[in-house]
Length: 123
Image (tube, rainbow, N blue to C red; front, side, top):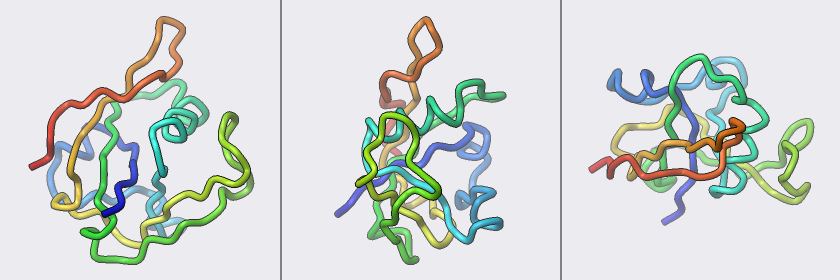
């Protein structure tokens, strides 16, 4: 069983139903990260000033029911992530049943994401 991490808005998670990021419509897949350090680098690079609370969904790739491809970042990985890191791209929505844990990104006083704190098991 492989777990990947998907960063999304708390409201999107709590609204019910499958999780669909805007990238599914625009790029054909939902972005995810392979591990916590990579997720934190992505959050610091792309979500330094979020407009709403965020959560990180721990997703069981065997339960998503669609293709998951491990691909290089395009055009380049975010600062702090090696060029050799592959990112999981989920080619469909994420069923709620595939989410095994929900985590909250934790920020330090300077606003940098430094950890993921478990909110609850998704069971």
